[in-house]
Image (tube, rainbow, N blue to C red; front, side):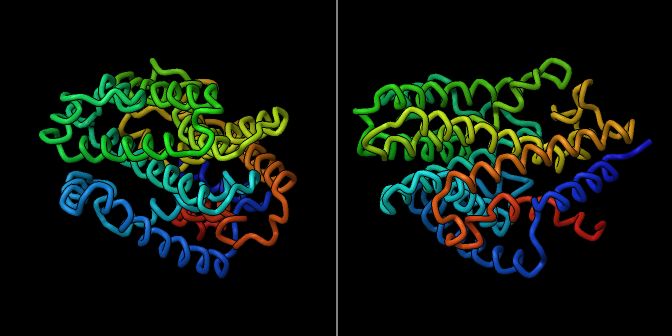
Amino acid sequence: MAGDMDFNALLWHELEKNDLVIGPAEYKVAMRKIMGWGVIERENIIKIVGIQTWKNVLNQLSGISHENDCIRVLGFGRALTEYLVAPLNIPSNLKEQIVTVGVISNLYGSIYDHLIDAGLNNKLVLPRWALHSIVYEKRGLRLTVLRKIGPSTLRFIQTLVEHNIQILTELPYYKKHSEITESIKELYLQLYDAEIETIQKTRSHISEDTLKNKTILFYLIGGLYTWLCIPQIHQDRFEWHIKWVRQFGEFIAWMDDAVDLAEDISTGQPNLLLFPENTVGVNEQKDRAMVQMIAEKGKQMITEWQLNTKDYRELPLVIRKAPQICTVSWFRGLTDQK
């Protein structure tokens, strides 16, 4: 019987065959840049939440309590967001705001994942009424009290969500493109519901679509933010970009669960590779078909990006190969198996 490490080795080789990884020299250069970005973004986050809240949250987290892990998460948040917005070529000052949204989203997504893995305490979850109030700008006494007396992790997430909504309201076409604005607000609540469903339901009671959407929605929200920086919506271009962002998010979802496979098997957490129709580690032929499917999704996503991103070869390595760098980072423990 093939084990999860055998599956991940198969996946690594398939990704390598499809140019979905980069070599050691390029990886070293890219990671130096990503960690540098992460240091800058950490300082930006501390300015938003305060140094004491930052320290308290690090102390509460088991999986990313090492500050370097947080820096890496923040740096990749920037790299992947830069990749997402590159096809649209928005002004640099507005791009910085979108990047901030992506960095924050990547951070609290990682925090939720680690809290779930650690056996999440419900008191650490932002209540749905609070998220609804923040998203629809209905500030009141209850939110103020929550921010003052809630646990550090809850206050941390609340402050970051509030910051992202503030950015939303400051984008130049927030009111003009009201349908997109409304979609973003609805997606925040859909993402919350998907996160809660993941927390509350066992592996056998959660759907594959819910699990994929949890990742897709993070990136879809950032993708839609970008369109509030563009004065005129060209429908064909808009539809292409949103469809592509979904492809991007789905590839990330499959990769994330592949990396977490062993841990999710032991903890009983939901995983895309553990649904009955996908189960890996039992039949090598089926495993090979699964890794080919994942690699094909990644290859198609990158090809689409290259075809639709003007002068993409002139972008810095850390942006134009962000997915490949991310792949090697995830699989850094498997690279010796090549």
